Image (cartoon, rainbow, N blue to C red; front, side, top):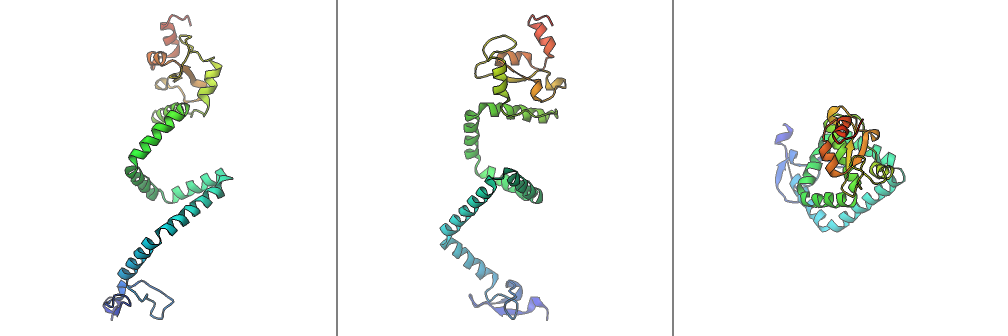
Length: 213
């Protein structure tokens, strides 16, 4: 007889079922669990519900231990995450998309707060993202805006007026004209000056403003 027509009785529900309805268990002589798959699933679900807090606390402790283990070695932590992502790329993409869909309002609120708390980081991130879209070389470093603000004495090089808090990071040689997204190709301009400059060549723009270059 084939395995599909051989049956046995479940020790929990007492129903005779095909052996394909039982999980394998090599510790028993017949190599099968005493209870069928359906009964074992129901039993496990009931156990999880009864021990939910215990399982949640254990999971939190495990995650905390992992964070502590990698805290002293961020390079190792980053390498471990990259290795896991490489091995489970499709799974990670689906999980991240599902998480974003289920937490869209909370993530939006977090992004708004992070941008308000770190305006310079938001500016740097925005310029790097724009450069990637244009496939421009280079990546702006953290702290660049603060460094340039000090070097420029807090003034706009175009109009000599104070930069204020709404200054823009301007690519001296625009990305549209082949400029790079590197620290050396960045200056801080007042919002109005940067909007007027747009994608113009820096020399042409300054000549339009009356500078003899």
